[in-house]
Image (cartoon, rainbow, N blue to C red; front, side, top):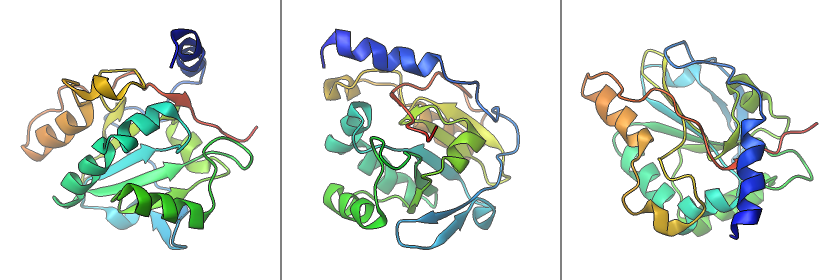
Length: 200
């Protein structure tokens, strides 16, 4: 993507409101319906690590992680270790990234993605509750229900797949450290990507 097109996307992120929940505080419970029609809540996963991943199929930053297979690999790795991984789609109807349940299920199958569930949040209720700004925007919640990380997935704020090589992954840092009983080295970073396409 040419730099002149990239700059407006990045600048759009910086004008959004501050996060609704801060690292180290209790993660707010939520209720949502996933792409299979099942209800999902945070409280039902108490005692487990939970990853929240804000997603948008049309966002080039999201595509970097999915078309390369990177996001799917992370999902499979961590759900294999007992982590609950919830993708959240807060795009409003008529906005980029909005999908029907069938469209999301087809995409997950095509990408061979492996989240525990994909929650459809067209009214932006869950997104605003957490202050999700971008796609992707990552949140990690520990088994006690405390938010231990929020922000970018890694330190390469670019839609270029080549930047995945050598990227420092903050999400994995948080999970590895917490599971080892160590302090999370970086609890918060500035998320990068396309602005979440909330309803007005």
